[in-house]
Amino acid sequence: QVQLQESGPRLVKASETLSVTCTVSGDSLSTYRWNWIRQPPGKALEWIGYIYNSGTTNYNPSLKSRVTISADTSKNQFSLRLRSVTAADTAMYFCARARLGMGPRFDYWGQGSLLTVSS
Amino acid sequence: SYVLTQSPPVSVAPGQTARVTCGGNNIGSKSVQWYQQRPGQAPVLVVYDDTNRPSGIPERFSGSNSGSTATLTISRVEAGDEADYYCQVWDSDSDHVIFGGGTKLTVL
Image (cartoon, rainbow over the protein chains, first blue to last red):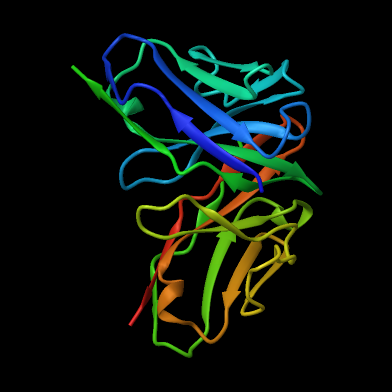
């Protein structure tokens, strides 16, 4: 059974860097695409980016200049770093596995980690 | 960039049929996924590649996609179907994922 679990600080100060880690069990990071998706309170889902085969990454162009997704295969974890955060980055951050078919589909999700940016 | 526009909130009585639409330029040429998100929970995939259901998803959930509109149909709606529903596509040119704005389904 594949499981994903987000972890990290829940409060970040404006202008600092947000970091959150996803620990994967029941699967290997060397397969599939591993994604970050966020959802501001009361708003829609927004795809942030993915890491594939522990090295290939691709990011949402609206966040690309501030985002880095990396992986630690020894711990079966992948992480998100978002620099220079503002209140607009306050959101629930989900990690999710993307299985490829005719297009990627997110078949396993973490329960989410609510990150708040304070001024 | 590619934009997905979902239908407004919908309210249906139990046992009736609910339809949620997702519009996009020539969306019929893309693979569409649908997710159900109940309050306080992570999204759950209910339809993928336009018409397919993952294991464990009831047959009451079905999808279609043609032209400029994809549709999620929920037959014999139950109270537990009350949730937000999101469509999602993949832009193969940029290898980016796009979500729609979500549609809230209320069961009366």
